Length: 394
Ligand SMILES: [Fe+2]
Image (tube, rainbow, N blue to C red):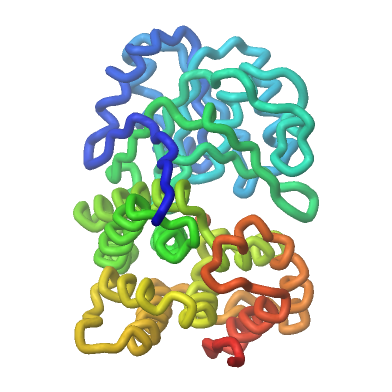
């Protein structure tokens, strides 16, 4: 028996041109003062204006907030909360990648709560979220994080990360328009695309997977594996960008409900200690973690192989699971991401400290189908350094 309770999702518009639903949706909320949280780079290249202009043309007052940095620190969140409370906004729009969307969620919830953001952190906070957030519209401009459908805002602390999360932080509306992703450069398309693929793969092998998340995850893997290479090579390809956009959205819904596991747990220390972007951190570990846990879920690995476009029909589950690891390694290499830790200038001497931080990700590691202890994590980092997938000693 599987128990599942899908968390509710935002009202979602997906597909090419779906941004045109923004104004009709805003009309429902009758806002008087809108805060638009976006990345400064998107303002520079005019992408955030593709959202702001029609909103202003429709007669709404819009204030742009661009103090958004990748992996935003707590102080960035505190500043944004103060700005939002001080200006009487009554609706928030987030436009951008994961950081901008996470900060938009934070602005919307902190506008209706008192006290420092730090008081609401998941691990160390002393206060609870108890009020509704401001109406919130999230519009991703990358195909990767799935942040538009989750209730999580990630904040960086001095040497770790924490989150603020609550069902009240789920957006009122998500608009997932692939047209907004065509100018994403190949490197970012590759890294964010592998992040989305990892969400789907980890949701599928999670011990919290359910028939509902399985359907979301497998279709996401199909769409992403079919179109990621093309989206990296030819950013203007409408079909590839549409598949990636839908794949990332479905993967977001899958992992929000089933969770991610070992790849993300071991990727966080790479971000924390070496500032390797989140998607790249996942990409460089994906084949090695999956090789290590392969024997704990061979049937699921065979299913993933099929969704990746392989044919497991004439293979045993054991053979198919091997091939699945090969296929995952191939897609990472095909999109130009280094396939070893040394390719990211991580020295072998760092593997112990990475392991020490990886072990701390207990909540995420708990979803792995194979329990991963400290010695296992050390072996996986070593294999990612050497570029040779390994398995646990039997
Ligand atoms: Fe991720």
